[in-house]
Amino acid sequence: MMPKIEIMPSILAADVGNLESAIHLCQESGADQIHVDVMDGVFVPNISMGPAVVAMANRVTDLPLDVHLMLIRPQQHIEAFAKAGADALIIHIEADCDVKDTLKKIRDLGCRSGITLNPPTSVESIFECLDDGLVDEVLVMSVNPGFGGQSYIADTESKVTEIRRRYPEILISIDGGIDLETVKSAAAHGANLFVAGTGLFKAPEMKTAIARMRANAEAAYGTQL
Ligand code: DX5
Ligand code: ZN
Image (cartoon, rainbow, N blue to C red; front, side, top):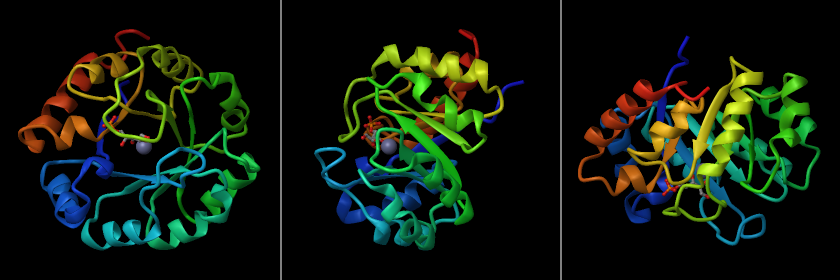
């Protein structure tokens, strides 16, 4: 059975001076969730948004907030993001923390727990957390994190397939370089949640782009599993 396909615009690609209206636009355009990219300037070279932006997003939309923590020490910040209204907190397997303990704490804070891995990181590195049942969402990075607007790395799709085969029920999101074409291939390999920044915010009309992205993903889902 096909899992629910969801489209998650990344507000990293929005005009930072108009984030509130960007979130309204996502909701009006049929987005399923909002993806918020949090960067500390250490884990990745860039610095982006913090809990205040999550709190603002929580005030202006009812959509779930999928919060991607590109932080070297996520354990120090999960409580602040949970209090700000995050629905999912996704940490990197490469972070400098007790990953299992942090995943447990994320659930204790009432959030969906997520793990993500960079393109060079092996898929096996996350299996222990998944086998222990600590993960609700696996986010496969299809670019090296830090910046929007990069090209999709198709090699990462084999990880999606392997995760989908081993864990048929888990949520698998894919993040980086997703557009109306790459979404087909990501879905074919078993991803069901699609993060897209540039691909949606730079489209002529977000509503049409989301509808097409969803239709393309639904048509292609699982065809390369
Ligand atoms: C990259 C971020 C992505 C980014 C995706 O570090 O994790 O969520 O916003 O942007 P696009 O869709 O432009 O590749
Ligand atoms: Zn992200």
